[in-house]
Length: 382
Ligand SMILES: Cc1cc2nc3c(=O)[nH]c(=O)nc-3n(C[C@H](O)[C@H](O)[C@H](O)COP(=O)(O)OP(=O)(O)OC[C@H]3O[C@@H](n4cnc5c(N)ncnc54)[C@H](O)[C@@H]3O)c2cc1C
Image (tube, rainbow, N blue to C red; front, top):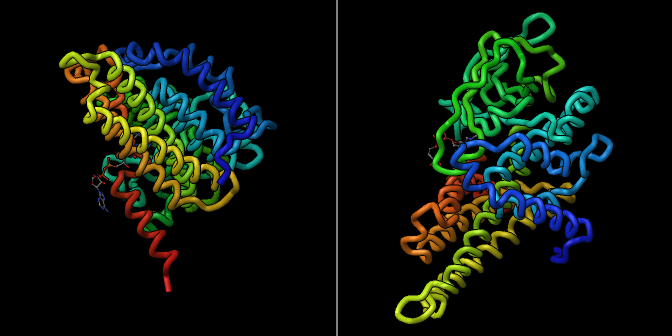
């Protein structure tokens, strides 16, 4: 593995850092408002952040997964809610259309997605089907030259701001996960309602919604991939998605470490800066080591994906390690701030809350361990 970034990766990292400088001062205000202002979404679109991996022929930047992960880390370091919106949009929606779409579907959606004119959402989870995603109950039944969808979805990131939804529903309930299909659903479709906005612990500017389908009729052309082939699409997209979440966790952890270092250098107790106490130094050392190790795991998984290699185990390892690390680093950053870590004046309090979601979405930490163990056992099968 080459640790030196390519010229393109360095340029994209610089561009992401420059945009991050605009996003960072907004984070506290947006979280109070529980929304990202539309002009910042448009600006991200103009700068290319909504089409990072979309091929240039469809108006995107055509970057590989490693360069994408580098950009995601920089943006999450500044504003994790904004990066969360981009992560779902790029790795779960643009990639869904790019990898599995027909030429017509690509022409219809990719240009608008890449420009940020249409924002994407990915809807797998349901009230009764989270970790056990194969047990979803929302259904689609054939009707004339299309399908009719019924059922409920929940926890949909970008739900209130999306124009295009990648939706997974059961088309053959008796076949469980082998009877799931994927549809591209436009916001205006009759019988489709976007529901309440969740009040979340962290990532509060990210818009998370429930969805409802009631006699929602879609044409056959909205089927993505093959009939009953949706679960494979959902799972294969999650390899890339987990790299995005791993990069988010590295960005949050780096921000928490930055905050802790700055604070420790100025705060004085017992007549000395708290950075002079070895117990503080031990914390900072462990935090820095964790951030670096997490970054390396994320970049390894992203480098494999960039080369078109299977990276299910590596993406799960990266996501699990990076999100656990982000939680621990943010916890220690709050501790180093003492009482000031517990109030909103200092951003470490937000990092602590933002980091928590990483161990839950796109597969909980428990599910990542099951995936890693499954892959390890399979590799060693005799
Ligand atoms: C902020 C946020 C944004 C989200 N965005 C999206 C989105 O855009 N699209 C989408 O489809 N979903 C989204 N989700 C949903 C997310 O993917 C689910 O919350 C997650 O998969 C867990 O499902 P659950 O909440 O139903 O928990 P459950 O599956 O009920 O799990 C509860 C607990 O049981 C454990 N558990 C379950 N099964 C096992 C097992 N076999 N072995 C050991 N432990 C187990 C879990 O690890 C967890 O600790 C989002 C969630 C959050 C919090």
